[in-house]
Image (cartoon, rainbow, N blue to C red; front, side, top):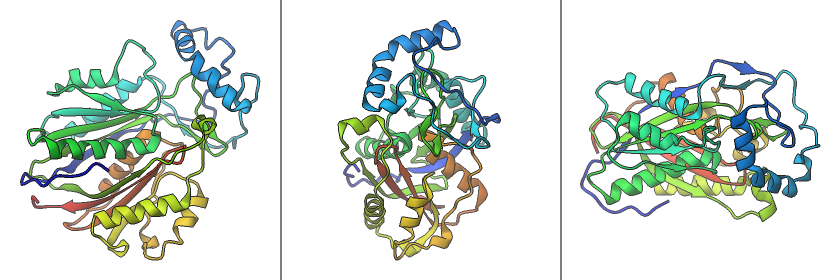
Length: 341
C-alpha cells in the first residue's frame, strides 16, 4: 500500500458501481490446441503468431499443457459465462455506461484505469484508449494487468495515492474487464474456469454517499520462475496476515465488520479463514450466481452486487479480500459514509 500524506481535501470514496455480465452460459467453453489452426480466422492466426513465444514458454514450464496434452477433466454440468458478441473494450464501455446511466449527476472521470488479465483480441485497439476517447477523461489512461483478482485492489491503491498527491485529481473511474478467446484457455486448474464480464467503480471527492477505503493491504509473494504460469494455491497464513494488516490500518476490530466478501476461492481456503478467532463468520456474504471466475472484474462486481442487495448505513464496514492465481492476496476495509469526511 502506498504511503498517504495528510490532506484537508475531502477523502475519496467509491460512490457508484456497475457490472455487465453476459447472459450466455456455456458448459463447454473453447478448449484451445495451440498447435492447430484456430477457427481458420485471420485474426486468430495473428494472435497465435504474436503470442506464440508466450504459449511455447508456458508449455515448457508445464508439460501437461503441451499441445498434444488433453484438456483437464471438468464436471460436464459446470457452466461458465461466455460473451458471444462484444469485445473486451465493448464490455468495459458497457459497464462504464451502466454506471453513469444509473446516476446522471455523477462527475465525469478525470482519470481512467483499466484492469484486465486477458487481451484485447484486436491488436490495434487499446481498451484504456477507447474508454478515454468515449468518456472524455481529462488525463491519459493506463492499465493494470496480470494480477488477476488482485488487479482491482492495486488500481484502488494507486488511485488513493494519486489523489493524495494531486488535489486537482477529483474523480477516477476504474474499469475491469475480461474476455477469453483463443489461443488462450479458460482453464486455470481442475476447479477454476475463467468467465467473461466487466465491472466499474467510480471514486470521487464529491460529497456523495459511498464507500471510503479505511485500510488496504496487498501481498505479492515471490514464486519460483516455473510457477509464474502455473496456478499456485494461496497460503492461508498470508491471507490472514493481509486481513490483520488491513484491519490495523483501518483502526478497526474484526468484530466491527458488517459484511465479509471473500474471493471466489476453493473451500479449503474458506475453511482456513474460519480459524480466524475474531471474524464474524456469520456475516460472510456468498451470494454469487455468476458461473466461472471473473478474474480482474470479480471484486468490483461483488462490491456492486452487495451494494445493490443491502442498504448500508453510515459507519457500517465491509471487508473484502481478493486472491490471484500465483499466491497474490489483497484485503480492503471499506466504511460506508453518508456525510463528507
